[in-house]
Image (cartoon, rainbow, N blue to C red; front, side, top):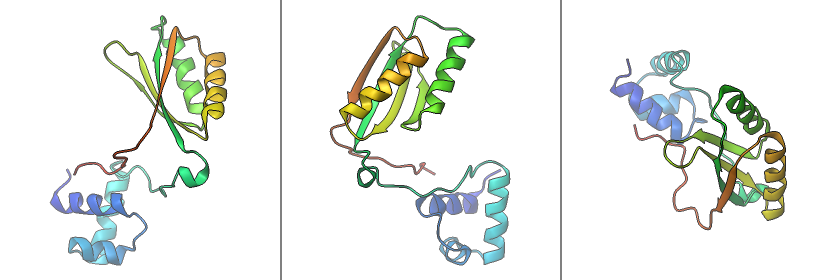
Length: 150
């Protein structure tokens, strides 16, 4: 069970996971050891899935963010497994979701430019049969965060 102190720890960590246990403990009002025990318990429970560095995509020549909408005529386990393997094997694909409604799947990718998107598209359609694929390109990021509302 997550209590208010755990929520404070998670809120602080998801904004800056690189800070020391001393700084984290000070921010939430706990000793270093008590903070460490709580963080370890949250990791063991799977609440904290990992700690990562957030990178600036533009500075890494990945300025084009694209959302790819996929519709398929195939709604079976074999097709889904192939699609899952394909999306997981392509590092440009950041996320892939099975959707409700008119759209079957939504894929988020980061690439350098339109040529790089076309190469990604060509590799994807070679791996998986899809009946309709369309893309929307991000013109401006109004909000982009990994922080959950705790």
